[in-house]
Amino acid sequence: MKQLPAATVRLLSSSQIITSVVSVVKELIENSLDAGATSVDVKLENYGFDKIEVRDNGEGIKAVDAPVMAMKYYTSKINSHEDLENLTTYGFRGEALGSICCIAEVLITTRTAADNFSTQYVLDGSGHILSQKPSHLGQGTTVTALRLFKNLPVRKQFYSTAKKCKDEIKKIQDLLMSFGILKPDLRIVFVHNKSF
Ligand code: ADP
Ligand code: MG
Image (tube, rainbow, N blue to C red; front, top):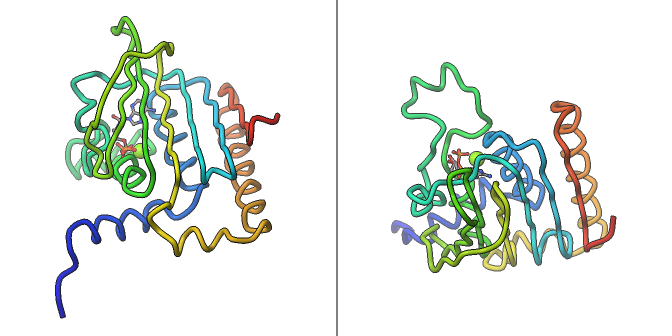
């Protein structure tokens, strides 16, 4: 018996957290709601396998936090397990963005009320910043995940039939509907392949 390499452990644990397109969308919307967003736009291309994009008008991510925003177990939501007694957020484990970086290519564009312009960060597979540049978006955060499951053939294979892909879109619509019922004041827009 031998121990698996760290990168393999990372990929396997990430694939337990991000199991489907709908799980990416769920994690990203929960982050938007935790950031106080009142408006969320979800866009998919090719059922989400080419591109998943979630844009919000929430509080944004401070530049000082950007280097750790997608590092696993970094969170702004709790400080220790005692805080689990009084959770007010959906997130608290600090695993979602890091896991998504491990199984897709991730870009995060964000701007806080204190910033003069937004910044787009390109992340690598372990959630480190590869590059950054100024961009033109308003306050809030846009997370873009490209080429989902490119490194996980077993997961991709699961979606090899049109039926499985269509079922996934239905699950996303149901998820968005539940958030809509839960938060009647939230504006949610869903676009698949640019069609309304
Ligand atoms: P968690 O939600 O469990 O804290 P995540 O990996 O989902 O972990 O996110 C890591 C951190 O990145 C969050 O704690 C938050 O500070 C920041 N973050 C992620 N998404 C957003 C967003 N849409 N708006 C503002 N901050 C965000
Ligand atoms: Mg989260």
